[in-house]
Amino acid sequence: MIRKFLKPFRSMSITTFLTDIVIFAFAAVILVLSALSLNRTNLIDEKVKNAQRYLSELSDKVILNAYLANKEDASIGKEMNLMADSYDGRILLIDSNLNCVNDTFNVEVGKTFVSTDVVRALNGTSGEYRDDETQMVEIYYPIISKSNSGENGLNGVIIFSFSVASEYEVSDRLGKSLLLIVIPCAVLLLLIATFHSRYVSKPLVTMTKSLNHISEGYFDDKLEIKSFTELEDMADAVNNMLFRLNSLENSRQEFVSNVSHELKTPLTSIKILADSLVQQPDAPPAVYQEFLGDINAEIDRENRIITDLLELVKLDRKNGEMHIAMVSVNELLEILMKRIKPIAQTYNVDLIYESYRKVDAEVDEVKMSLAISNLVENAVKYNKEGGWVKVTLDSDHKYFIVTVSDSGIGIPESSVKHIFDRFYRVDKMRARKTGGTGLGLSITKSVILMHNGQLRVESTEGEGTTFTVKVPLSFVEKQNTE
Image (tube, rainbow, N blue to C red; front, side, top):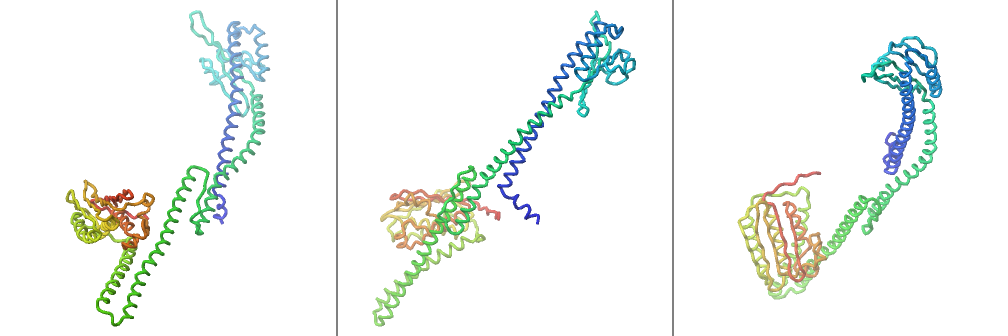
C-alpha cells in the first residue's frame, strides 16, 4: 500500500516539479521575511536616531539651565510634553539622587527610581531596549556636563519610552503589498516548474520509448536526443553499443551462413568422391589413392573449422582455466617457427626469427602458443610469392614484446578496426582457399587479454602488416568483481 502511494514520487518529472516548488517557495519566503524585517528595522532605527538626537539637545538645555536643580525653565517641560506627544511616548528626568524631577505623565514626580538601567546610565552608559510584543522602545540617556577642568560630571538621566506601532503598521502594509506580488509570482512559478519538469523528463521518456522499440529487434534505429550534455553522451554510448550489437549480429548471421557452407562443402565433396568410388568397383589402385587423398584433405578442412569453434567456446567461458607456469618464451617461439617453417616453404615465404635477449615469463604455454602461431600462420598465408615474415622477441623490466611483421598484401584501412571481431574475414574468397574461418585473430586477442596483455596492429594495404604483442612477465590474475 505504501509503495503504491510512493510510486508517483519516484517519477523524475514529479520529483523535479516538487523540488522546484520547494526551492522557489523557500527562497520566496526567506526573501519576503528578510525584506519585511529589514524594512521594519530601518524604520525603527531612523526613529531611534531622531529620538537620540532630540535627547542630546534636551540634555544640553537641561545642563545649561540647571533644570534639575531649580526647575525654573518652564519651556523645557513644555518641550518635553510636545516631544512625548509627537512620539506617542513618555519622558522622565531623573537627577543624580535617583529622584524623578519631571514626568510628562505627571505620575512619578518626586519618586525614587532604583533600577539597574538608571544606575548604569548614571555611570555614563546609555541603554536602549526594544519590545516587539508591546511595540515600544525605551532609551536611557545620561545627562553629562563638563567642568572647566574638562572633567565630566553626571547630572542625571533621561528616560524616553515611545511607541513604534506605526512602523510595525507600515511594515505590515508592505507585507500585504508583497503578498499581492507573490501570488502572481507563485502562478508563474508553477508554470516554470511544470515546464522544467517536462523538459528534464521528456528526453528520458523519449529514450525509454526508443529503447523499448530497439529491444523488439530494431537494431538499426538510433537514439536522437537533443537535451542535456550528459543525456546526449548517454545516447551516443547507447548508439555505439547498438552499432556493435548490430555488427555482431550481422557477423553472427554471416558466420552461420559461412560455417554452414564450410561444413557442408567438405561433406558434399566427400559424398561425391565416395559415390564415385562406389560406382567404380574395378577402378585401379591409383584412382582409389587419389580419391582417398582428396577425402582426407576434406576431412582435415572440416576438422580445422570444428577445432576453431571449440577453441572459441573454451575461451568464452568466464571461468576458463589458465595453466600458468614459468616458460622460456625463446624456446616457445623456436618450436613454433620450426612447426610453421614447412608451411612457409609451401607458400615460398622466407621465415626470419630474431631474439634480442633471453626471456622467461609466467604464461599459459598452450594458449600463448596458439595465439602467436595464429599471427605467424596468417602472415605466411596472406603474403606475396617470395615474400618474408619476421618474428622478433624483446623485453624490458615488466613486459615481453613479440612482433610479427610481413611483406604481404596488407589490410585495408576500413577493415583494420574489425579484424579482431569474431567471424570477420577481410578477403572471404582467399580465406576460404587458405582454410580460414575468421576466428583466428579473435582467438589470439582473447588469449592476450587473458594474460592482461595488449595486441596492436599497423598495416598498409599492398605493403604489409605488423602485429605487436605485449604481455607482462609476471601474471596477475584479475579479480572477479561480479
